[in-house]
Structures are given as C-alpha cells and as structure tokens.
Length: 634
Image (cartoon, rainbow, N blue to C red; front, side):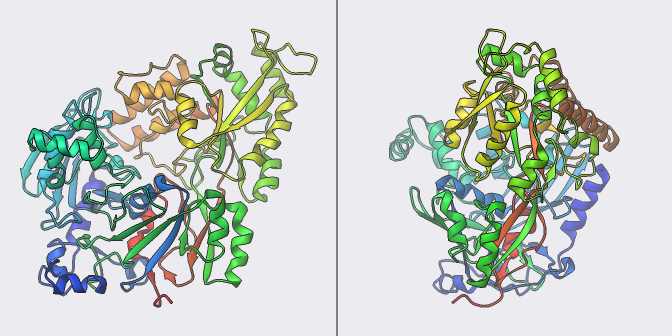
C-alpha cells in the first residue's frame, strides 16, 4: 500500500499535456476584469502545472463555461455544504476511493511515516496571493503551536502515541512531515469532508496575529469584529468549515461573496482555481452557485416546483414520488443514489447520560441487544421505505471490501421472546400494573428519545418502534429540538437516547481510519464524554470505563501504528465484530435511496452513485467543478 500511494502521487503529478505557454481558456465572465487590468490573463492565474482532469478518459463529457446553479438550503449553517461538495483537497479520493494528489502536484509516503509534499509552482489563493510552503509554516508554527489558538497543543489527529511530527521546509514548493511511528491516517484526514487543516492563507491571516500585527491595529480589528480576545478574532476570520467570511481566501472552486446574515448566499467562481479539462478550459465550468435559504420542510416542494437546479440536500426518499412527477412539468431530472450510512436511521443510547439508573441499564449489553431484537425492521422497511431499503443493524455496506454479513445481521433479527429473556436476565424482570418494566430504583421504563427533527420520516419510524417496544415492557416518548440544542443536551448527559443516522462511512477500506467505531469524538451520541476525552488529548471529559469501549480505543490506536495492509485489515475486522456484537447503536435499515434532483440541462452528474458525508463528501468525489450546462439558461 505504501508503494501504491507513492506511485499514484507521482504518476498523477507527471501527467499534464500542457506546458506553461499552452493556450488555456478562462470563463468569459472574467473577461472585463482581464481587459481593465484588475485581473491577469488565465495563463497567469493557473499554476505552471495545473491539474488536468481528463473527462473523456472517465467516460464523461468535456464541457463549456457559464451558467448559474440555484440550490436551496435549510439555514445559514448549510453554506458549509459548498466546501464539502467543492472538494478541493491537498490529497483527495477519486470515484473509486483511491487517493490522488489534487492541490498538491505530488506526494510520497515512506513507511506511512515520512510524507513529502510538492506544491504546484505558481498556484494562488482565490485573492491572487501565492500558495507556498509559508502557508504551511504559518499553520504549523503560528496557529497549531500557539496556545492562544490551540490550548491543548497541536490537534490530536496529528499525534501518534502522543507525539507530533517533525515539520520541515525543503524549499518554497516542498515540505515534509515526519513521525517516529507510522501515521497511516494522515492522507485520509486530508481527504476527508472536513479535512485536517494544515495550510492557511498566511498573507491574509497575519493581520489578525500579534506576531505580525501591532497591538493598536489588532485592538481595532477585535472591536470591529466583536471579538474579546485576539484568538477569538483569528478563529472567526479563518473559519473554513462554514465559510462565513467573504474576505477569507480559499482554494475551493467557488468562494462565498455574501456576508451573513442573509437569505441568499452567492458563491462565485475562483479565478485562480488549479484544475483544467483536457481541452485547456479552466475549471469550474459553472460560474456561480446561488444558495437560497428556505424552511427545511419546504425545500422538497420548492425543488419540485423548479426552484432549484441541483438539490441533493434536504430532500429524502419520501419526496421521490412527488419529485419524479415534477419531471413532467419542469426541466428536471430525478435520479436515485445509494446512501452510504451504516444505517439510514439509528437509535443511540447515551452511555454517558447523567441519569445513574438509565446509564447502568444502557451499559448492559443484554439491554442493548434486547432493544435491537424487539424492532421489526421488515415492517419499518415496508411502511416507511417502501421495501426498497435493506434491513440491517448499523454496520458497513456490501460496497466495502471489509463487508461480512454477520456484521450487519448481529442482533438484527426480530425475536420478541429472546428480547424479553435478555431484559429479565439484565435485572429488569419486575413490571408495574401497566406492564412496564421497572428500573432498580422502581421507576417505570420510560425512555425519552430526542431528535434534531431534520428527517421527515423519523416520526413514522418512532411510531412503529413505540409499538415494538411495548411488547417488551418499555414505553417511549419523543422530544424534538434544533440540532445545536440536541447535541448540547447529549454532550451534557441530559439525553437518554437520540435518533440519528448510523456510521457516516459505510464503505470503508482497511486504509481508512476505524475511529468511528471507537470513542474518539464528542459528536458520537453513544459516548460523547468518552469521545471528548480522546479529542481533547485527555484535557476534558473522562476516559471510557466500559471494557468493550476501552478495547475499541486500544485497537484504533493499534491501527494507527500498524505497518501493513494485512494488519490494518485484521484490526478493522476485530473492531467491527466488537462494535456490532455490542450494539452500541441500534441500526434499522441501510442502503436507502437518495433522490438527486437536477436540471435536465446539467451534464456530468452520474445517474447512479454513492451519496454520503464520508468518504464521498456528498457530491465531492464526482467533481462538481466539471458539471456544466448543455445549453444556455433561459
């Protein structure tokens, strides 16, 4: 695998049929800026060796410049979808989930320990400032190693057994990260939907840093941007996950030009984007994305009324019949992609909840297994998903080379008798006059299941599960809140159980990190406090005290230092076995279908594909910068 990574990086970098003097073509929307001298010619805007995307070789059509794509978003926070979908990465996945250089001209990985990166000479940020190794040095020295910005030191994702890398600048275009032990997750972290940030636009950000800015000017900038500390100011102005600062330079195909708050966000083409097609046209083809804010409940109706040109988000399979019928009235095409989550919907007991009684109950594997066995997945599939999903626990999909049927079917059959027996064995053998089981402290087994209310079918699923769990003496109620409140309640231990999606990455390879299976993040609803402890490097939360969770964490650490593909694959299987047998999350169905609404004039969008956050970055691996309009818009 090490050799494959190195060869891929060098081969992809070497293939470029264009020279620095080749005739490139820029979008006509920038012609006036070029004529009045406010922007250089396209050749000067591109790197000397741009990334060439050979669409014909991939059975796709080279396109042409122009057009505006309208999308609907459910709130201001959804502008985060643009850098995910744009998928400009130092190293990224292709459609077959192989890693390849993107922003980087090339890379080498020796022993999964020594990573050497070569930049594209002449590459520029969206404001025209040069991208050089200085931007990596600034991120490393002035941000990650500055305690005002990173109180816990460098990000935990950059540490192997607690130790960070040695950082070297070789020259203006070459840099190197060296660890004492293997760090096989490093490249995958750079290719993720929310990538590890190791490069920042230093020419812009230095104005917000006391090392480069005088105190008086910095104080004025803090006052202007309503920041109490310079660290808060720097974080606000450098945030890339939600691109709310229009002045922040980017390497994405489109940049946000609208300051929040707003009901419409306009993303304009990056004049300095580093990719071209085989005909020399600078990408992206599309000039502009316009994101209109709408109520989430109205998005499907608006998309089916012709108000969106590309709508993968905030529509679901329940909307498919309506959306498909809209093809007869509007120039729309609706395809179905396969969702990659380990479960389209999952019930997630909070093993870190503050309620002592329920925490002890949920930490008993017999209870979690019983709750899973009591669910009639076939009924839910037929009633909610029209029988088109796949009944399974929360596990990986057959599209993954790691797939085994026993993982998805672990404790996922419908067996009320066994479920009741397991609950009795767990000490919940007493019931009240209504038939509800009693906790050790005498309280009836009533579970409040909390939701962020972002899926239209959650209430239908919970209504059916209410009947299923009544057969085992457990009553459930639901509470809906906004996502931020929902997550805060989970982390604070106020939530007993949540309803959410299953594993983000249901199609992993052995080379991808298994950290989703272990307590490694505070947004893992089943063990947020344990995850926070890992994420903070031990500075917050507390470590797991459940043997299976501890074992998963140890295995995940072993994966990070594994030296061969066979070792990593074996660790993955050990973790999948523990995770699915322990039923930390109660999956219901996976391989659900996702409507992909698009203008009938848009080209290069696959009819069938995988759709999910990780590892495909929603539309990202399908390269939206290569989508184009076959004819001019009316």
